[in-house]
Structures are given as C-alpha cells and as structure tokens.
Length: 82
Image (cartoon, rainbow, N blue to C red; front, side, top):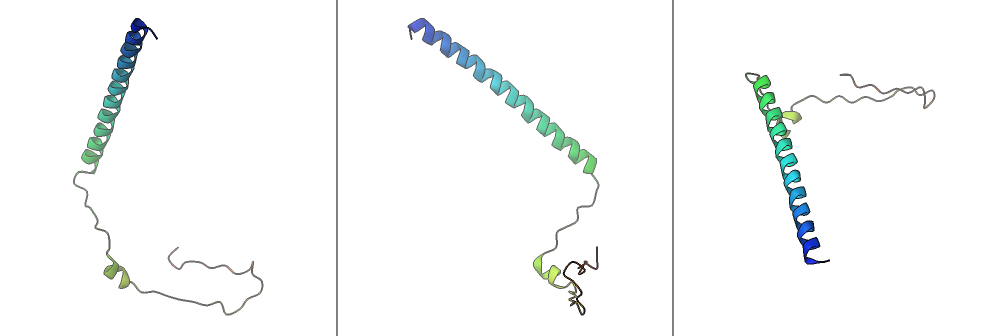
C-alpha cells in the first residue's frame, strides 16, 4: 500500500472505532436505564432472603414406595406439593 492508502485506511478504521464506541455507549446507557427503572419498580418491595442449608434441613422429608406394580407405564410418581 502506498502512504496515502495507508492514511485513508487508518482514518476509516478510526471512524469505525468511534462508531463502535458510540453504539457501545448507547447500549450501556440503555442497560443502566433498564436497571434504574427496575430499581424504581421494585422500590419498597420486601426482599426475601434465601434459605441457607441448615434452614433447608429443617423441612420435613417424606418418602414413599410403590406397593403394587402392574406395568412400568402405569406407575406415576407425583410430588405431594405439586
């Protein structure tokens, strides 16, 4: 490439980089606005803490067994909560 071609290529590359930076800045602003809106929508709502492992261990556990089997397709296991 000749000197002028290299210069033109560098200028085009710089313009492209500036466009990418502008798009990224716009996207970042949109994301920040989204989360700010979420904060406002959720303001005042109670945050429920997650249970830790010792809390989970306090829940009762039930087990069951199938007493009668007719056919593998006839057996339906259901969660008692569901």
